[in-house]
Length: 308
Image 1 (cartoon, rainbow, N blue to C red):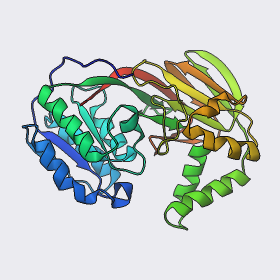
Image 2 (cartoon, rainbow, N blue to C red):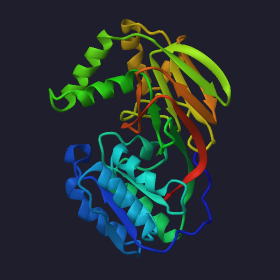
Image 3 (cartoon, rainbow, N blue to C red):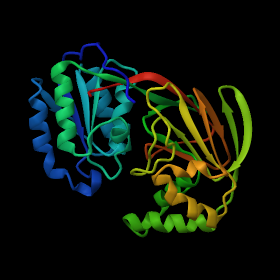
């Protein structure tokens, strides 16, 4: 359950809007003028941010916050929201996610309607009423000391390996590339030795699936960390042990309902700080390529103020 309404006022200033026209394969592209028109109904100027790449989008969000934006709204999927969150994490600038992508896990898990127009109405009402709700974020610190934030789930097992392979492939294009990457990695499937430190307590495990969740879902509704709560100040760590191919294929569909955690090879832990290491793993947070292991992941309570 989300936290109670915060009483901190929404800062003055325009509403900065980051929109990804290619999100969700462009199916909501034509909605942007209507979304902007409704946002203007909150009684504040609306400023559309210009960006051609994900890196430019993130830089534009940072610049908007530095220039005095009173709020930031991101129209797109989890990747777009991930970029925007980097600019508002730990600040007083509130944030509104408008789900318009293929995967909208963070928006869904924090209580926003699936329909973009309905989500904008929630944001407009929050702006009018000066209402925000605090939620936690996960802060990732790399071995080099770089810091990234994520809202939903960090994948560090089979799904991350599949993403990494799919991103290296030049053929085929579209969803079939991901399907082919799954087949290739299933053929190569093997448990890896992970070194975990949970709130200072160390353990080593052989695992195929590893996920660290601030929220419950990733991948467009797969409830990999089904009991994760973005208001409890904790991270849920789900570890799927020595699965063989047949067992993994049988268990994977259960992730959509979150019932995979009942499997005897799955363990669930809860911690404020997670230190994670394994050889040859590049992690993905909110579906975005993040960094190679080792990483330190910390739950930061009330790091984000949602316009809800």
